[in-house]
Length: 230
Image 1: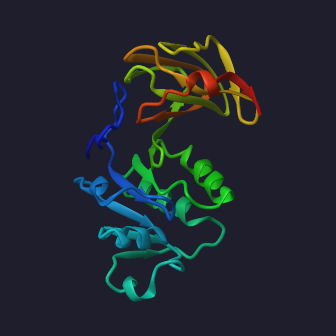
Image 2 (image 1 turned 45 degrees about the horizontal axis):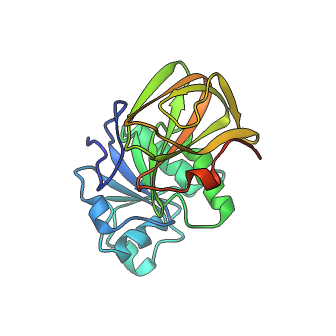
């Protein structure tokens, strides 16, 4: 198992030990991201993305209909043909069985909007995190009944969404939330900012999806709406 560290990746007091990297068929980071001592699991067509940057997955899971047939023979695969579930869902179920969760999930964005929404839908129940390279971002799900502490650079962009609902309170943000009800669809806090290097988020109820940008931004005044009705 290994902590998540990559260039300017977020450090927080709720760091987990991640047991695998899961790669979907979306936008993925450069090959240096995958230089970790944990298994790399490709979800079907994610194998093609990895091989295109010179990274061989330890395992490919899915119905395998998107894997380049010329390359498939040289890959370690698990064929799961059940069409009642998508490949990402089947892969995460397999990783749970073999105790390779939680994972660092990448490739979650970059495709069609329905695929992205479905990826997020599945991701929410896995206890994992996701990483997107453009823009560099880490996404977490925070559960009710706990307070989570993050170490961030000042003026870090952060968005908080109820999935589907959450009630939260924050400390250390430019636009603080107190017993605020978030919902998707509904009102959420997007493009908030950290005021100092320590931020806390208390989740009173529900599930909160937290997305933290890993590069400095300076568009707070122009784009932030504390609670935007969708």
